[in-house]
Length: 268
Image (cartoon, rainbow, N blue to C red; front, top):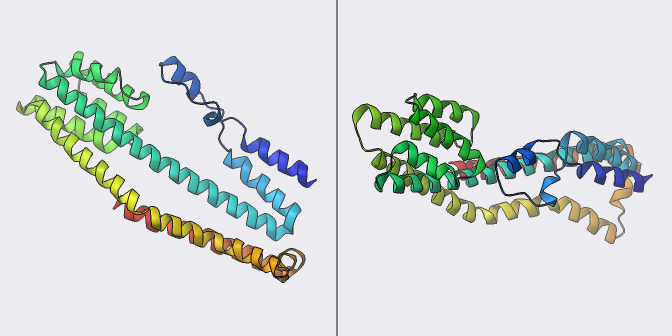
């Protein structure tokens, strides 16, 4: 029974994400992702399955504890992925702005400069840059198009709004667009460098928080090695079940609190 539950949990966790992104990426010529990166845990099914496995292993309290720990782990994984995507998006936009400034300084038309850079940009930024170039060629409102993409893309939204404001200022007041975009690029590059520095300095506190989160598990293992049998108390007694739920809740709260403290420092 336990082996079957483990195999079921493993199968569901490796179930492929039913998303059309791989097909769209192939359609737009994006580099294919590796075979293993296409499989992501399905949190909606993973948490109940882990909870059911906890019930089989350690009773009702174990099921609640396992489900809470699985939910916390998935939440932290999603937070880490979002932060990584945010840093990648900022770096990609900084590179695109630098290339656009270079094209403008070489005498290219703004629409042509943006279109040339969009051809080599990452797929998510490529759509916004191509829309900007098409709108500029047709004589439309570039700032409105940029604001539309800024609402749809929270990762690049603030920088895209600055891009639209720079374009609108250049059109309405005759200020060279290259100088305005260079100022936006300089500001974004400084923020990216500062974020990398803060991220590197917070590696120690993140590791400390991880070690502190694992200390209760280490304490249980030490207790079993010393012959105190804490697992038997937690699994076979009602008081132990209550302690198991309370302890797992405190672990999840500690992990969430540590992650919040670190994220507030990084985003400050």
